[in-house]
Amino acid sequence: MKKNISYDAMGQRIAKTVTNKNTTDGTDKFVTTYYMRDPQGNVLAVYEHKHGESGNGTFTLTEQHLYGAGRLGMKKRDLALNVANASESTPVTHYELTNHLGNVMAVISDKASDTNEPTVVSLSDYYPYGMTEPGRSWNAGDYRFGYTGHEKESDLAEGVYTTEFRLLDTRLGRWMSVDPLFGKYAGMSPYNYCEGNPVVYWDLDGREKHSEHYLPPEHPMKWYINKYNTLNVDGYMKSDADLRAKNERLEASAKVYPDQDNVFHFICHGNREKVILDDNKRYNANEFNLYITYSIQSELIERNSKEKKTTIIFLHSCNTGNTDGPGNCFAAELSSLGDYIVIAPSKPIHRTASGEETVYEKGKIINSGGYYNVFYKGELIESYGGYKEEGLLEGLFGEDVGEAVNMPEKLKNFNVDEIKKKYEEKHGDSNQ
Image (cartoon, rainbow, N blue to C red; front, side, top):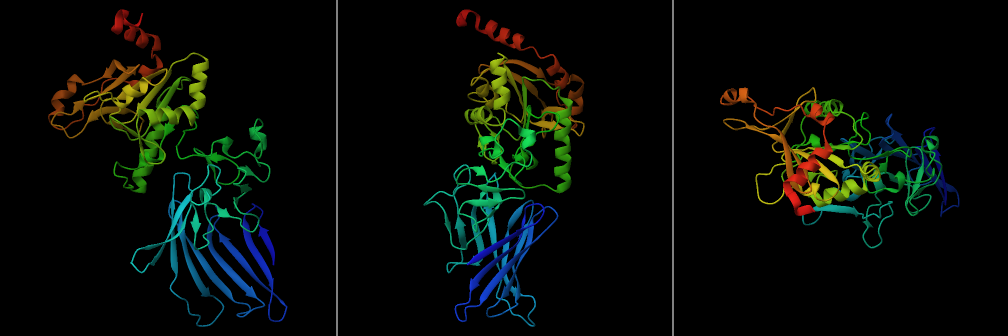
């Protein structure tokens, strides 16, 4: 058996020919597979052209790929395109179940089993760099897509995946060729994958690492905006217009606040006890602290630590600073886990198109005013904002009262030493 694979100028596979000897007369028979792609490189359809066997010259549509925000799966077909009145059995659709990195964890078929349950085509668990775990992976339908959603290059070796610019060997956790952008990353090996952090990052095309969170270019290390901020609490996707408007507001917020080396801004859904991170799961303060310490903000926190700077964590996440309840709120608990001063809202946050934020709770006869509470070593030290006195009367008629402080301006002159001094004064001689 011989295999010949053809690639386009972008390094994408466009055709594969497999040649075998015909067992009856010793002549060659071969099948050429063609991949039709859109301008972004996504596979839209797969065709097969057979020669030298029964059905010589048959040109068949074998796959149609399905897309939403990403690839959802594919429809498996067997439609002969150059045969008159060709019949086709009922197409079978395969749907991908993926995680936050795009790894295909399971594939479900729409062909029901004898018990009218969906048929599982494949299950996969992966090591961090993408090799499937022995005894925890199973594939009954030869589904070609797996780690980070890329196509397996099984013609070369088990565990090799093809991307737009390079091949990835998941057995070694290394690329098989040099980074096209190696000049941009002179301090790294041109074969390394995602800077050695495949849990948070993945590489879509063999050039740049990516992650689920959104970092505005104005603040490359000091902002975190979770993509799930575009979902409501129940996970129901809103309209495209709503999503665009919300993302524009998030970008506006990033521009409103001053750029300060020791401040980490975090925008995401939250409540008094937890926040939502990349995988759309709720994390308590301990889990969140591990996440920012060992992933996206590790560089910022490490730098502050070396320079003996206290990291200010500004949570633009609803109710994370709410002290009305038993035990510590999320922000108070977080402030006790490191050299942090945590600023968080006591009520829900509402954001305008200009990036301004207000803290108040809707749906009250008089809208409840909110505060940006400041925590240090697990305790509430300071509060900014509250009712606008002139707004109380309007509140009776459903007007928004909101909060009174301009936090972007307040943050420009935020005094870390003053917060620490208030903590020491609060405890008197107990710390001496």
